[in-house]
Image (cartoon, rainbow, N blue to C red; front, side, top):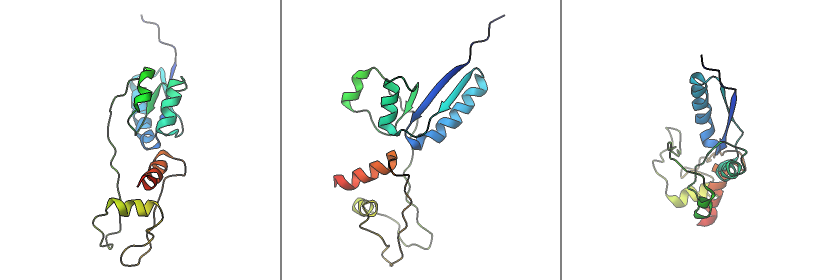
Length: 143
């Protein structure tokens, strides 16, 4: 009879947008591998996740950004596991059916604060310092 394996912990972290999926996948994995505890750490961001992985603080990092050429010699292997859509939603009564890149930049940059009909534009952002908020801020500064 085989000896049961000792309990093992696998730490996962990185971009906040992927952590919910990682929790679901971790729970499913634990169903088939009860000796493995999958721990999803709070949001570190893509870069933070990669740094934590290379510093051995994580076993798996999830990122929403491609690896930079200077990060590739570190020995880590990147694999695409999925894609996440980016959504802008407006109420049905709002006549907007498209936005230009410049309008999106102006919305995130605080320059566009109302719709064409004068109704206030309410922007719901991720928490300050999160990867998504930082990328939006970077896009508005880059143009």
